[in-house]
Image (cartoon, rainbow, N blue to C red; front, side, top):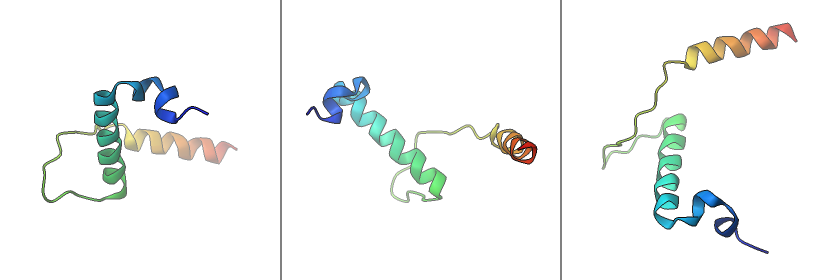
Length: 64
């Protein structure tokens, strides 16, 4: 059986895999409210649509 890194095209390039993993970790930490104290994050997440998406989800729930 092949490993995930062997079958996933995004993980084939080791440098891209490392960057993607770091980005995923940062965004997950951001969602959980975890803040890094020793290093400034270079990733900025656009939250401008968050409220609109939430309202749309609420509308859909009320319709069902």
